[in-house]
Length: 134
Image (cartoon, rainbow, N blue to C red; front, side, top):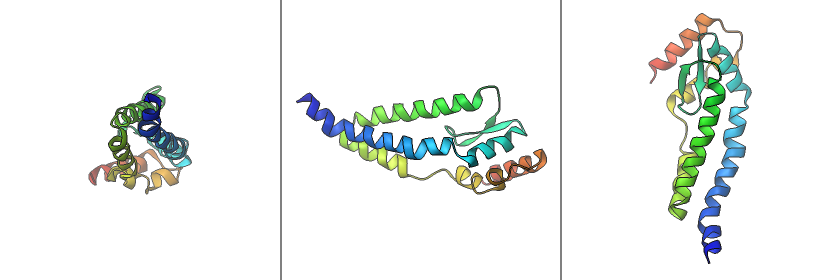
């Protein structure tokens, strides 16, 4: 009986989360756009934090730590919401499809992700302009 409850209520949440991780999060973390963005931001001592959806000061291992934190946060949210069974799965789906924050959308439309030949001054100007839209 317990196995049936798990299969009916908890497994669909984890299945959906696994698909989102494989086809949503992982491709974004390995995208050329994100690599170009972080390459440009490194010129001014910053990086794009996927977990916070914002620019953060760059330090050794900061990008790898942010990726780990993003996946850990994703797994914790999935675990907590899957405990709510069907309602939790619906909340999880709503969370995944709810769109990206405005700063993130605007950042990924700029030359910061399209061109890697920007100067530090150009990168700084673009970041300041993006921060002005918040």
